[in-house]
Image (cartoon, rainbow, N blue to C red; front, side, top):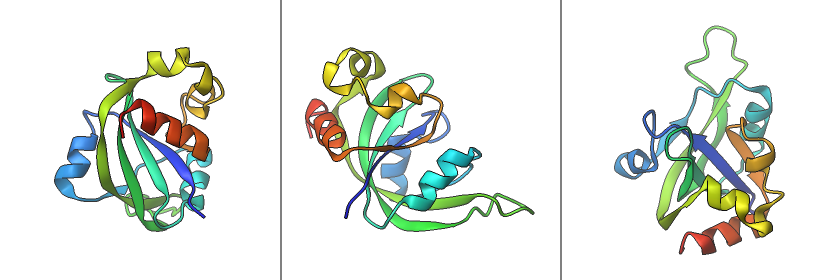
Length: 137
């Protein structure tokens, strides 16, 4: 059963365009226990919306989980953290700004708003499909 996620990244560090250029990426560097636990819940082919944080503050593209969690190679020596791999599916035809998300009554309970500091966020299928519609996908 497909699960749905938002992954947040600063576009200056890694953007959706970088993901398209590279064809896949290891989602590493997560250092929050709740976000790590969410990475561990991701399954192969789960659907992902990529959100550009800090500067853009907008939903920008669709990706999918291409490899489930394994130890984060940047986590030495402890081994407390994990990564997943994702690959691009398609960019949204139009970005969905955080301001738009916050004013849309259908998205009032979107975890992106309630847990704004979390970088790996589970969302409902309904929210995922609604956001796709807003983005023209």
